[in-house]
Length: 295
Image 1 (cartoon, rainbow, N blue to C red):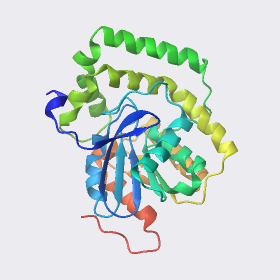
Image 2 (image 1 turned 90 degrees about the vertical axis):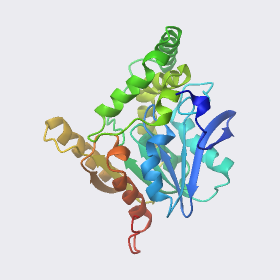
Image 3 (image 1 turned 30 degrees about the vertical axis):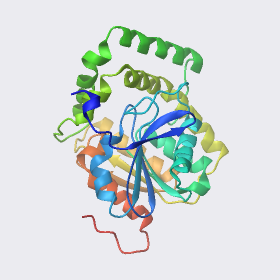
């Protein structure tokens, strides 16, 4: 299935010169959904459907991912946090927003709260990335140049077109406990060199974004907003899985937030138990009021 036969689900907004694909739906308090490394807007479909009756839901593709154009430079933590703020400005949303960050985007959500405290109403980290003592081994420029070369070589060999959608499906199966059909846009998006390059660069810059967040925690306090850390649990009793839950619990304590478990779920919590993510968002901003019933 080719991309020109599929209707574009959202619209494009230019932020810092880059056309970003954005989907906005629903009404009510503002909520932004941001996916993990290499993910797209459609990964949030089920969560957005649950939240839209009660929230204005914004989901977007970071540069190079989904349907967004590629960025001129590799990602940095501050740039990703600022991108959320500028995207909301471009959409005309000046009020505070609850930021929901999954995996790598958990770094971005926390950074947004620290760098734009007046714009943040709350933070939900969905199986967010954790690096207690990040120490990148190579200079950023060296690693990003290497990653760009790898992405170029992959594209020249035609591998994104040949293997991109299959690789995406394999990652999805490994990161979920349920069976989920492929999304129509998976093949259209993940067969492009644009998306492959963005995935490689996000992976390459991960340790530097982790180190940036560690420095930001020392320099900028977290504003007094509600925080929920939602950890995935697939039901296994392995030492690695139990240790991951403890690390997530420790992150919640460090941020002064609430710890919750989403089960049964793999890393792609929004696919396995979207209701857990929606409930975490609604409970976060409905504190002190009757709980909002999910339809």
